[in-house]
Image (cartoon, rainbow, N blue to C red; front, side, top):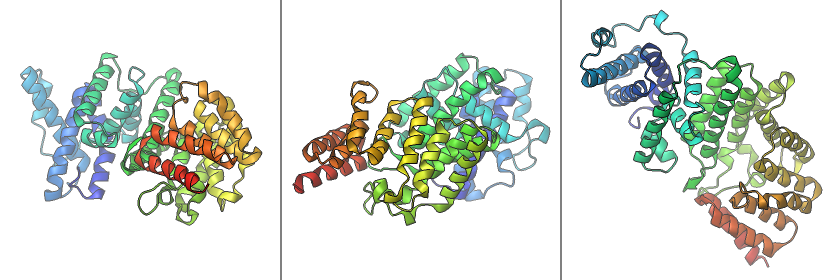
Length: 416
């Protein structure tokens, strides 16, 4: 889709889950329908720049995808049944849109697809890949580039995910109320992971991957539109908006990482901040606080501070304590320790880090070494801080993070 104008590319991504929903609802066979939709998107990427976007773009995609699907059935099953033969004789794409009674509101399909792609039979990495492909409308090549793996590797991962979904007997329906909360948690977690990978790329030369950030926020908006009365959905969208609001100030002229305390806050996206604060403030008035709401509330406190020195760290510490009670996690402890250091001093923060050394989830993680380095620097232990910065630099595969950590270590060496 790289040859398309940005507006047309955005349109295709928006229509992709709608078209897939129509096909799966009509024909079942998620695996085959998803492949057919991808072929239709490719056809649009080739034809629309030359011929223009059709009057009914979704109808065009539905028709082309249906023809791809029926062609595949014909080649494999030799006119398996009369319905396929009728489908092949459908009118040209520009003539008529599919009847309204055959296309329920697209938002229902998007929600069903999100839940289907986050089926519990899949691993988290497979859920992420399938969500980006089927719901986000990204091509396999785009997803592979975002995660810095060969296209063939990502293609196999997506293929296996679709096979597992079908083998598990998953149906294109919303989960029952009894299953919904558990499945919704998986959906939110996948979108959270996609956003985080975009905001701080785990490897490669760039700090951000704007394509993943944009898809995560777009899908979170869609989920919020579909489930406006879920506090955690509101919280996740608010967290993404408040976090992404820093993006323009988070890198310097050469792409170097700029930490929060040193960012030019005039470059923060005030519209995104206002929207995020309004979302989380409203959600917390009627919904029991959940992990995403609390993380959004913490981000809101940072966003409201005119400067790093004026940040209400006591409020942030209180929010982290509540977050640690309802969703204990070593990364929560890591962030909490950094906040505690700002209130009670670096020694108090370092004491909180000590138990993480024996936690296999964080013991070798570069973020633990990076936070420890920062707190040691605040405590005046320059040599120990320098060693921790270098250890963190060796542990990260993100080039901007590595350069930043090496620069911090270098300053401590030259300032002695």
